Structure formats: C-alpha cells, structure tokens
Length: 224
Image (cartoon, rainbow, N blue to C red; front, side, top):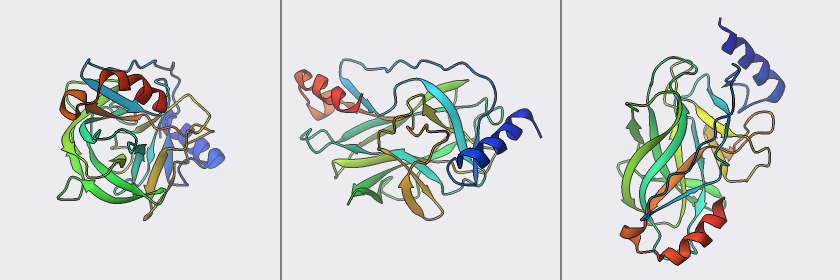
C-alpha cells in the first residue's frame, strides 16, 4: 500500500469525500495555474477558477459520473457544442491513461435528466493520447443540442487505481453547478475538505452558432 493510498483513506474517513467509496490524491504538490484557451471564434465556459487543488475518484467507479451544468437559455441559438474540456491526470493514481466516458445530459427541474449525447446512449469512450501530467484533455463533440440547459459529464468507467481522476479547483466557495451521479442518483458534488468545484468546461464555436463578438464579455461574466 503506497503513500497516496494511505493518505486517501484518511481524507475519505475525515471529510466524507464523495461518499465512503471515494479516493483522494494525497501526495505533495504545488497548485497548477491553468490558462483558459479561447480562439477568436470560440467561447469556453466553466465554473472553475483555473487552479487545481485535488484529484479525486471512486474506488468502484463504473457508472459514476461527475459534471457541470450550464444554462444557455439567454444565449439564443448558442447550442452547438464543439468540445468538452476535462482536467485530469495520467500520473495519479496510476501511471498511464485508462480512458473514460463522456456524456451530455439534459438539465430540467433543477436536476440532471436524460442523456442527450451520444444520441445512441451509453456515453462516448475517450482515451487521451500525447498528453502527460495534470492537464486539460479536449474531447471533440461537434453536436447541436436540442436543449439550452446542459450538463456535460464524465463517467470514471473503471475501478481504482485504473482511473483518470476528476480534479477540483482551489475555490472553497461552492458555485452550485457541479454534480455527481453515484449509486443510481444525482446529487450536488460532495468534494473534499470544502472543495467542490469540478474542473470541466464546454467550448462553443462562434463561427458555427453566429454569436456576435459583443456578446462574449457578457457570456464570460456569467461563468467566471
């Protein structure tokens, strides 16, 4: 049993992180500042502050999802999803990428609802390549949503330690937009030690959806 696993057990028992089946990174690290990437014709929305604090996952993670909701109802036709960005790692809890599933859920009655994408259901399996460390992984989507209230989410897919973890930022003020699906139910993300904001973002292509540049400042202000 290594140092990381021992520390994870202590954190889980003391902080009730993601329920009793959760595991938390315990090694020493320096927070990494992550700069948002935004091309002239793209808009990136997210609830995190860009700085990583913790990597987390479930011991038994198949069918366990974590995601962020985004309300686009004030943005007119702003429904074309270009990609989902997920901050994760291939250096903890094991050395190497294991892969995960990506899905986009409808969001109604203030809780996540049915899976909208992939339209065939089940989630889209993605295995990162050419990346190393704690990094943003970009998953291409290329899909126009029928709903303006969305929840992009990641399914851990496997059991510890063969996982690509979810990461939380350094803001201890919960933004109220991060969710977890575990043991058959959705609930607000529990996090650990007061850190609950998931580092998961969604990117739209302005050239595709036709949003005027003057709108970008207003949109960014809603989410950052």
